[in-house]
Figure 1 (spheres, rainbow, N blue to C red):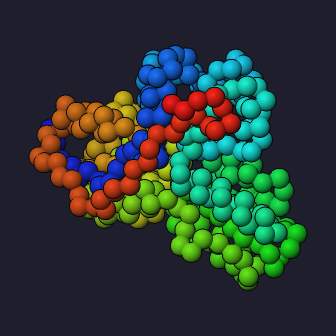
Figure 2: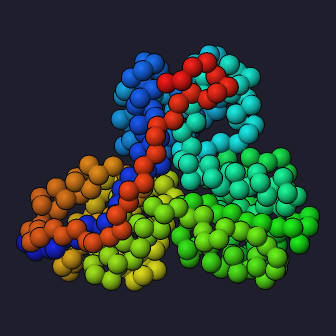
Figure 3: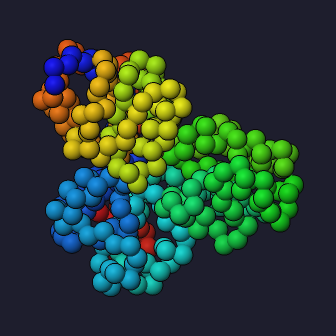
Length: 317
């Protein structure tokens, strides 16, 4: 393909602090305790990360009954319900909670509102592990709304004592319309001062908005079941960009590059940088890459310590 292209790399892109913490938690546990180490659900939503950890001895399960009694169980970055914690204890599992601290803060917010007698509305996607875990922090008076239509129909026990939180990996566009409906229906509704959308999600969405203005084509590196990666694709398209979500270089269709002079590349918060490198290698193999530029973006300095064994269990890592 005789074509010359400029490449712009989004900044920031790829792993966020919560994802780094979750992956380090699994790796450290494997090194200190040895294989196998069981993980409830995917530790993060990226098939390459999962495959790498499986090769090291991690075993990913869909339910706790698949884990032998007394073994180690790591809860994923998305968080779990109180009921899951209780079942793990009853099964004698040694648990490590790798829930992203930002998700944990939302759990605490939901629990606090519930103690104060509020109905809590979670703005998020039905069935997403983070939303399921957040809803499961309380026994009742919790509701999930995924769109404006559901927000119009939601029935709460006390309209004047209603609060809301949001899934961390949504986009502002996902939330704004739903929030408007809820505020109209429940004028005294309480919620976060700014947003529960995490800093990393917002920073990556801001970066892809810039790419959409500058590039003819945007490639978002991330797995198909990654909420934050899907939101990046949506934000890019809403900003007017032609955009595709790819797991890795093997998903690229050469036809996408027709008449393209500038490509923007970003990666979801659970996608490792080596996948971006693979996309760059593919471009070098198929077209003439004139230059690769990294955009100026928000510098992220937040980091979290890896998780250790729960105090309900035997010993610290």
